[in-house]
Amino acid sequence: MYEQFGSKQGFVRFFYHRALAFAGAYRKYSRGVDSVASRRLVFICSGNICRSPLAAVYARSLGMEAASCGLNCGDDYPADPRAQEFAREQGLSLDHHKTINVRNFDFKDSDLIVVMEPSHIDQFESKVGKSYSLVLAGSFCQTPIPYIHDPFNCCPAFFTRCESKVMECVRGLNA
Image 1 (cartoon, rainbow, N blue to C red):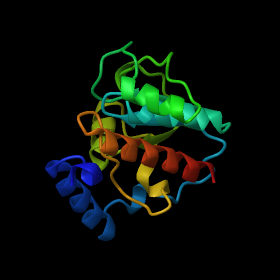
Image 2 (cartoon, rainbow, N blue to C red):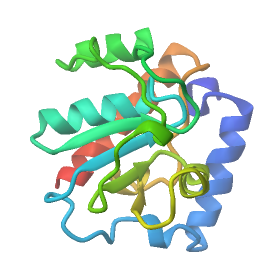
Image 3 (cartoon, rainbow, N blue to C red):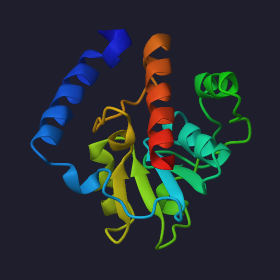
Image 4 (cartoon, one colour):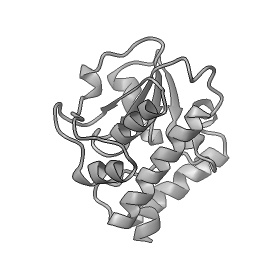
């Protein structure tokens, strides 16, 4: 279970959000976005040390304009060492990444905000505002999922699984 869902709580969250997605709760935050290619993608996760920095660096490597920030982090911390290693294995570098809190990030009206979890939608809107276009990153995976778990406290196999899903969503955004 830990290699597939990260934790018991991750297992519950995965199926909870999958059920809500099946019921249509996240339809507004899925693939139906106009003109992704002409917008800056701002990837958001909790701590801005695992998922969102990888997504941003990968998107930039594919020629997309991208940035990242976190909902619950301080500023100027490096990426998680495991995320740095995963990125290196993919031919990417997070060596110069520094965290930035959403409250200190310079958003543009035209940004497309790409969040990793449904709970990030409400957190973003309460901290930044409701005037931005938001999508769930996992809705751009080959098999859409509403929730990409935070791998921070998870086993190595699940960490790799989560970061691989992040890369898959970026490829979907680039399609």
